[in-house]
Amino acid sequence: SRLLRGQRLSAMAESKTSRVVIVPGNGCTPITTANWYNWLKKSLEKEGVQVSMQDMPDPYEAKQTIWLPFLRDVLKADEQSIIVGHSSGAEAAMRYAEENKVRGLVLVAACHTDLGHPSEAISGYYDRPWLWDKMKGNIGFVSQFADKEDCFIPFAEAQVVHKGLDTELIASTRGDHFMVQEFPELLEHIKLKLES
Image (cartoon, rainbow, N blue to C red; front, side, top):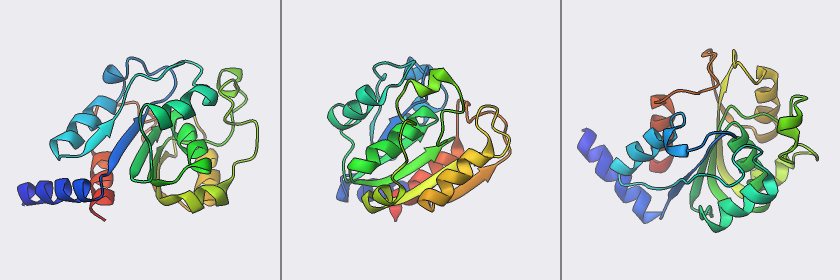
């Protein structure tokens, strides 16, 4: 039953002291009104899962020199954390995992280049090779939601991330860059990962 699953999920989350850390895309501020972030936070908290989510500093340029320390020091991403990163937040999650152990990554609309946009390049995520093997050594699992019709990121970008990290790829044809108020498929996927 749903109640038993919720109790089981809560017990699993507590026994592993799991935390879900939500990292938004750039420009998504305030985080509580942007996209599906607050809906996901509230949905997981109803299941007894601890969630870290705050407005990011430097929300428009999303510089790694600011976001990665914020992930560590404020959002407290650690070995028991599942980081859910959307768009620029996915790149932040990947760079974070190059140097830090995490329970898992759930990447939503991830890319591996700045797509030729100076506004993306300024973040600093794209100025060196991605250390795929180092990331894989620090991640318990990695899942990836990618859209074949993403209005911002070509699917070829997602395929490079998929190949580099050997992700569990969940592909769709939405065309909305996952900029929606609710994202039930993501919620269910995270709940399954918390139970495993």
